[in-house]
Each structure stands twice: as C-alpha cells, then as structure tokens.
Length: 302
Length: 318
Image (cartoon, rainbow over all chains, first blue to last red; front, side, top):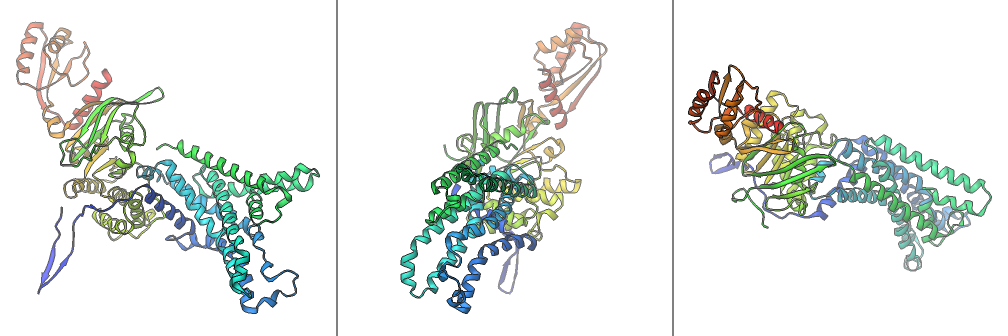
C-alpha cells in the first residue's frame, strides 16, 4: 500500500495521498440494497442527476397532476370562496376529491409509461443486470425494488395532489377543526385510492416494460394497449344495451383504479358496477402482471 | 463456517468434484480446484466452462453435484453473504451510459451494503485508484473503452471485497490501455491486498499478472498450480523419429513417461515432460531395444501457451 507523500514546511503538513484504505466498518443487508435501488429508480424516473431534457417531461406530468389542486386552492386563496359562489356546489366540492383520480388517471398512465420504461429498460439494454445480481440482490429482489420505485414515483402523482387539495380545504374552511373532524375519512380514502392507482399502473407498466429493452417501444406498447383496451371496453358499454355490457369496464385499465377510488370515497362507481368488482379486477390484474414480469426476469440469463 | 481471509491456510475458493449441466450439455465436469491468495488465472477456450464456474462461485446458479466454498461459505446456500465480500467484473459492457461514473460506483457500493456516506467516499477513492479522479463526474457514455474498463474495476472494488472475479478484463483494449489495465490488476493485488481470480484466454496477459493458473478444458480442470511451478515442471523433451515406432511409444508409456501432446501410433514427433533427467537414459535404452530411429532430441522450456495448448490437446484426446 502506498503511504503517500507529505509536503512539510515550517511546521505544516499536508497529506497528498492516503493510499488505498480498507473498509472495516458496518455493512448493511438486503433491505439497504433494495432501498438503494428504489431511490435510484425514483431519481432516474424523475430525471434527477440527468440532463435537463430528462427532467422536463416527468416534471410537466407531475405539474399536470397537481394542477387541479393548485388552481382551486390558488383561486380560493387569492379571491376567496366567493369566486365559486355562482356554482350550486359547496366551495370544497368544485373539484370533488373522489373525482380527482378520474381527472389525473390519463396523466398518471403517461407518467407510468415513462417511469416503468426508465426503471427497467436501460438495465436490460445496457446489460447492467449482472452487476445487480452479483450483489446482495437476487433477480426477484431487484425486480421488487424497481417496481416499488415506480410505485413510489406514481404515489407522488396520485396521493400528494389530492392530499394537497384536502389539506387546503381543511385550512381554508371557516372552522378547520370541525371540517377536519367531519372529513378525516377522506384522508384515508385518498391514501387507499392513490396507492391502488399507483400500484395497478406500476404493475401493468412494469409488465410491459419487462419485455422490451427500448424505452420508446415499452412506453408506446403500454399507452397503445391501454388506449385500445379502454376504448373497446367503453364502446362495448355504451353501444351494447344489455346489463352485462357495463362489466366490460372491468377490462378498461383507465377505469379500474378509478372505480376502486370512487368506491373508497363511497361514491357511485363507473357504470354502477359494484366497487368490489373493481377491487377484484384490480387485484387480479396486478397479481397477474407481477407474475408475468417475475417469470420474464427469472428467464433472463447472463 | 467462518470467513476465510487472504492470510488463512484454507483456499479462498475451493471446489470439489463440481458438475453443472445445461440440458444435455455438460458445462462443468467434476471440476476440483483451489484458489489461494494473490492473482489466479482461469484459462480456457470459449465454452471451456469459465463463465459457468464464475456464476457458480457467485451463487447465481447451483451445481448439480459437488461442493464449493468461497471465502469459507457455500455460495449455493449463502449467496448474498458471499457476494457482499466478492467483486465482479463482467466481460461485456455493463455500464449505464447516462450516469456519472461517481454516481454509478457510489450506487453499486450502496447496493453491496455500504452506508451512504461511506459509499460516496469510497467511490471517489477507488475511482482515483483506477486513475479516473478527474473524470469521475463525467457521464460514462463519453468514456473510452479503457476508461469504461476502469469504471468496471472501480465498481468491483468499491465495497472493499476480499476477492474479485475479473472476466476477460483486457477485452477490446488497445495495447497501451491493456498494459495499463494489467498494471492496475497487479496494483490491486500487491498494493491493495485484494485477491483476484481472472478469467482470460490471453496467455501473455496471464503470464504478466498471475501467481497461479487453472486450466479448464471442456468443463474439466486439466492443470492447476503456481505459474512458476507449472512452467518449471513442464521442461520438455522433443523427439523426432525417422518413422512411426509404436513399440518405442508403448515402451515410453510403460516406463511412465508423460506425453505433453496427444500421441497416436503413427506419430513421428513426440513431446515428453522432462520431470526427471533419467528420461534421457530411458529414451536411449528404448531406442536401442526397439530400433526406433531418432533424428532430433531437443530439450526445451515451455511457455504458458505450450502448457495451455498441450493440456487442451490432451483433454481433447481423452
């Protein structure tokens, strides 16, 4: 080992080279390694530590998700509740929380296409997987961390904006404490609906991204598939005049998590299909998507 | 079993009768080997089983038969515990092009269990050690092949492993970059005190850096030992015959002579391992007995290439 040289003059010393130092300190285990991959996924998906061009699109989408809350609260703060006086609904129902998820569902799906492809495709294309597999992580743990990272990114878009609106409603209410006591259930509904939307979208987004090494192909396939399925399901529901046709919405990726959200808020679900059906569809599709991608990664060899 | 360090008498890597099949293909065939401290080279042609062996040692696949120990642990059962003390340098490109070198090496340090602040510090340190102190905040995509190989080495070293597996580390490098990489490997072993198992098919590279060699051929270990001993013990005696002399060859076999090349009955050129000076007497006596005509008798020291080629030729003849 190199002890390094020191420049000494008039009682002063400066270490120029410490040489190679062995590390004898603490080493963390698997949860720490997963945390590193999750944080790496969040950073990469949102464009942190990457060129400006990589930051613009995700930030624009996030801003779009926050826009309804920011607009409503901004107007209320600047003008006051009378800005909405002509409308027949209470001021906190201008953008009802149960509808918030419907408003942002498309934007969240676009963000999913971006985040999931960014999370999974480059590692396959650039063959980084062997380095992860040669660490504390198994293929399954690596995949779990990547999916969790995508869920975390999506939760920023699905939970924080309605939470901001709800917090604003509480703070701007005439009697915040009474309002809070009367609407605490909405807080839990926001968490549940936001997480359901994030998990569902992340699962199908990652399942699609797991089959392509190219981000553009993965994102295009996801958005194309979602639009096609949703269009077919909606068309079936609207054009076929039979009771069963409303259940076609259980095959519409943009409708399923919204249905669960409406149900959690105690509101009418799309096409009045029972909330439990939407929940069942969400659980089945999520499990199926995760199983598909798990199989795909188990088959990857290096 | 406790962890083995470089000072222990137990080998860093030990494999006994390890076999691995991929369907009908036998990738490793009852391979037994031991890797001691320093730099050990794994020599073999493509398909010899080098990559399979590295995967087994990393615990990424399980053997069909046999027993293995890496740093005193069974990689098939304690894969994570092995991998946290082992570094891995793959043969192919494996770097994310849009990451800064510092960020990537730090990230790999965390993935291998280093605390966040330590990972940052060690990423800077190892990148400086491999000669990328100034370039560490540049995206990897803009690096030359030689610089990328250095980043790969840095990520393999960042968590201060006891043992590093290098898979063809000089692949694709120009002569200057190749020499620099070999010098780096020597420094890793001698100055950093980190043990290396390097897989290579470039014999000149191996001869420059390795203390010991393991030769793999068609999944079998055909030779292993310290490089010095392997070259010394393979002083050779080359015989050229006027005509094929099966009786002479049979006599040599019966006398216990070791053939370094595959030998057939119609062979006119023989290469024998010169393990003992008495071989000259044996050759003289047998030539007189069988009437074999010898036109050339030459003593020579073999290069590593000769060792490798003869071991693989012998393996092919089996």
